[in-house]
Image 1 (tube, helix red, strand yellow):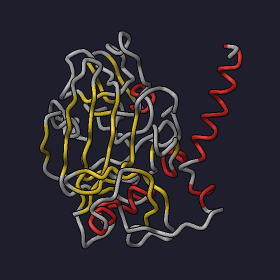
Image 2: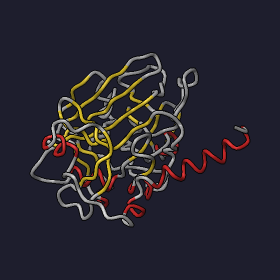
Image 3: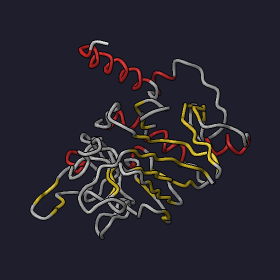
Image 4: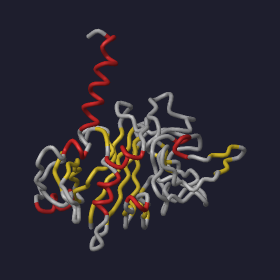
Length: 265
């Protein structure tokens, strides 16, 4: 294949991928829910395999598609996956709200959908973050009582007890950068609390601009998985990257792959 065609093909592929999680596109097709979330689907069908399913959480107005990881400990609803640079996470508020990417590959499910998954007052949810480095290592972090607020609350992050092997990067590797309780920020919607935040002789007014992508920034924090993806050999030292600083460091280390999932209890 002529290499001159690669950029064109890549652009067409990205446009196709972006439509996969766009709720406005999916409204054109009638969807029938298979369960309220991946946990319920796995509970009702123990031999269910990982893949794309249609769910409708309690209180959600319409069903929507998700990727379910069906594991031994139950069904997990994936709301973030990164494995490379084919899907850019350098997006603004509207796209982070509604979602983008391709469910079977790299994607962000959308803040509105994550809120729908965690909003119910009669159930609790567990957040699981899986991380992979370039040296063959992996680690995970789990948080009990995970939920996010609604749009008016800027989808404020709330997590409970941590357990795992990656370290509690959400609360931070040192005091004063706890992301728990902060709203989501993008380059066009700043909720990070920096006015400015001081790092040595550097002042940051906007964490999303320096860290990249959207996240629950706080000063600017030890966790940020939506910056630019960097390949092996060029993944250390970047301010923007896929960072979970309680696992890899001390120099900024951009991870090879990440996955964020939620399971209802």
